[in-house]
Length: 308
Ligand code: FUB
Figure 1 (cartoon, helix red, strand yellow):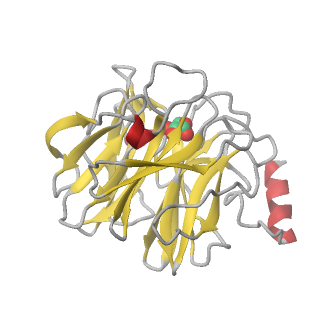
Figure 2 (cartoon, rainbow, N blue to C red; figure 1 turned 180 degrees about the horizontal axis):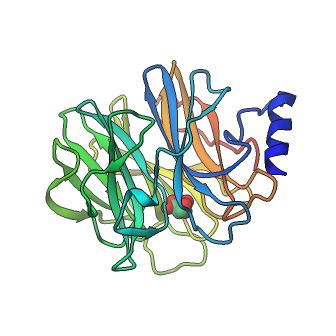
């Protein structure tokens, strides 16, 4: 039924033909990157009728015009990591050294805890193979985001319930120094709303780190369990950070949301997920995208979902 409906939407040429990006499968946790004149979006993938985050593979889509999306299939799946057994959750890919590195949280089959593995491929579309044969990071937390700073130093951030980072080595599959836990302060991460009272700030999960102009952005899913997307900016990748407010309010049929931002062909795009497809909800999500323009001071205007 979903396939049929997806086909109808595509051929009907609806105004929001680009949202959701995939209309015949459920997708989550967008991680966009610009490569070779196209925007590539790595996503999670949920099964039809899913009732939990039981995700088995990642999917990849690309577009040269932000309207027509090509589905490249699955560049990596749980079986890539022989040491993992569940939870192909939110990952991100980055290019370096002529290769592509795919940081992904999965459940370690022995410990039962979440860990972060690294897939590597010579092609952006994969297939990605396990670069290490074991986790890169094992502290039970999720949602890696990766950025290479102007001086060439790469940083891996991740976390829920904490926020952590580590300095990656040039090889992108090892790191130097300790795992560092960010001191989450209200000045940098806002005040928490909602049912959970143990956490000091709004930060929940899904960090997305990047630099634009002279500002470093930390965008994240906030509050539990009706997430919205909030952000902070700072003069360096490690802060200090100034909390800047909500980008995308709580909207739609999914209780999670997950940010990804890129500039492409002179425009800026905010990727997120919701429950907009038929049968959609908290465990049957869909990746969507909205164009936006930064304010002149680098702040980001409020962005609303065009479908929910
Ligand atoms: O998709 C599974 C989890 O849900 C992700 O890791 C979180 O960011 C949330 O979107």
